[in-house]
Image (cartoon, rainbow, N blue to C red; front, top):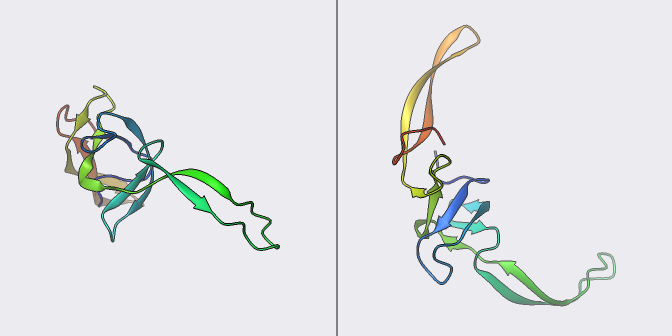
Length: 112
């Protein structure tokens, strides 16, 4: 189970965008990188596409990946960055008991 997932609200703790918050758009598990909405925007020069796609060329501003260690999950109750822990929880499913791991904010102890 990943500590940071797509759709999580995170705060950047290192780099040029330190202190900014945003929502995770994509997680690259193999390279340990995340793309956060509105963070680390870079300029890309794009060539026009083929005739079939009708994509225009030009200059685009896109979000670049950030290493996952440079972001922290924002605690939903305190709105401050927090570490993530896990708790095993017994859940009733189809008449049997199943153990599930639940992400928990370390600072407040509440579920994320």
